[in-house]
Image 1 (tube, rainbow, N blue to C red):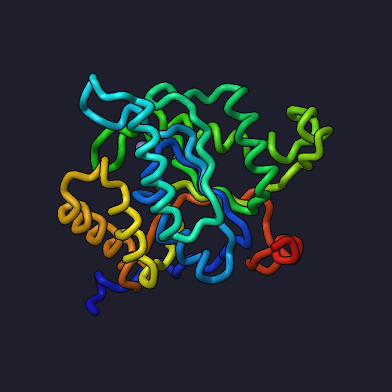
Image 2: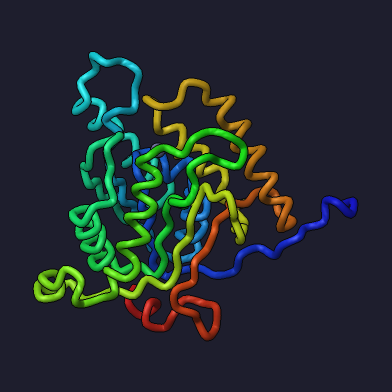
Length: 260
Ligand SMILES: [Zn+2]
């Protein structure tokens, strides 16, 4: 190893007991933090996936029935989620291409968070309009990301936000950390050497979306290896992390562990 190949960061050590991935479309989670999710699940975490839309505009044929495409994409995402090991998937059936961070979506996400009770939420970095290496971040990705952030803080933890939810028994939930993926400013790198192949398998389940699986796999491998080099491992995924509630011990909370 030469000097310029020396790792500059340590692998990210924290693991939530329960986590929720909130994304815009079926396949985003598998292009995003799937190997991290698989690794945490293998280590004992419980994960849940929320897709705000069912990807009904994810094609190039204006004659195509969007409802039929949505059904195909939901079944592809369910198959991929099974490979990763999520406990379940929610489809919120919002309109693809027209996702908006409005109060109705926030309430739905608060319901999801208060029902599953994650201590970490993983979502799109909503600050990204243009990716660092070029390309525009889809409007739905930005909308899903900021909707998830706004649902986590302050609404999910505030009993006076959507008070009918607390009255109906959905107690406030303090999500302690946000992990933002596809960020232009990542600050933590999770070692995914052991689970990267599961992410590749999960992506292959999105048959309707992937035209060149070999090329895609090569690009993913190169990017995971580049992030891995930062922490001295074969593969890593990168996140911008927001710590909302600090831990004392940098491990899953006793409360979260006992709730499993
Ligand atoms: Zn997407």
